[in-house]
Image (cartoon, rainbow, N blue to C red; front, side, top):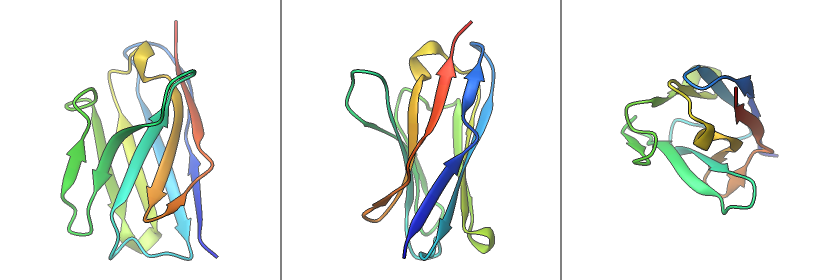
Length: 111
């Protein structure tokens, strides 16, 4: 049974930082790309970042230069380091591997 569990969300002031984690069980990161997506209230889910099986990274334009995606295949964990957070980054952040999704973790950027 595949399970993805995100954590690390919370309330942060604009300009602050958070690091999200996604721990996988039942699926390997070694041969799979890992992606992060987010969904703001009243909006559709959108792509944030992806790291490929070869560690190649891709980012949405809105987060380039501020977010960094990484993965530790030995720990079955992906990370999303988020810096210079803005209110527009508020939303539920989801981890995705192949067809599997986590339950999400809430990020709120507000003063």
